[in-house]
Length: 195
Image (cartoon, rainbow, N blue to C red; front, side, top):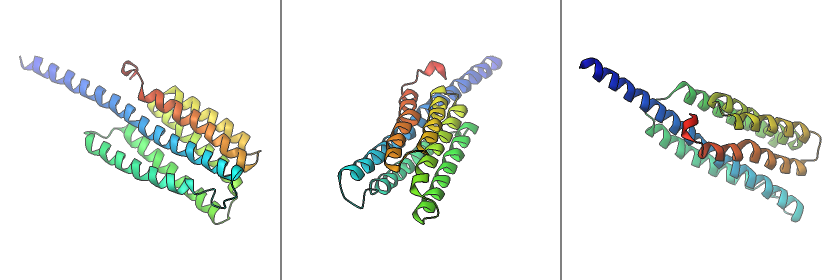
């Protein structure tokens, strides 16, 4: 009788682990969708302000939207952390990847703000980082749409090195749709049988 209880408990533990993994993968979609939409809006807003107005504050959408996204991500991440009973190696890899991404992007932005590097160079580098983050995430999660999105973002980054900064904003918008939004929605509505 005790052996049967142990087997039942083992199956229950396995079932709970599988359900936890499914939940974690779907929870990741929030971050891709949030940041995808924020970057898309900021890119298109800056492009529109540069093309159709004479305001010197064409960049204002970036700090406003990125700070708002950082706060939303922090709150959502905190709630996920409280909900999660176990922190897996996959969870840790994703945490370190995206914190590293955030630190790298901040370093490049600060360099551009202090004229150590040009903003024309900044946009392609940011697209390269988008590609890196989604490519590695796709590998960690074993989710091909993220891997493919990362590869396409890298191709877009290469092209953006050779064009003017206003058009780079449109390429950044395209890269974010392909690397974040499409895979983000696919993760969100992913069939659980694939986990």
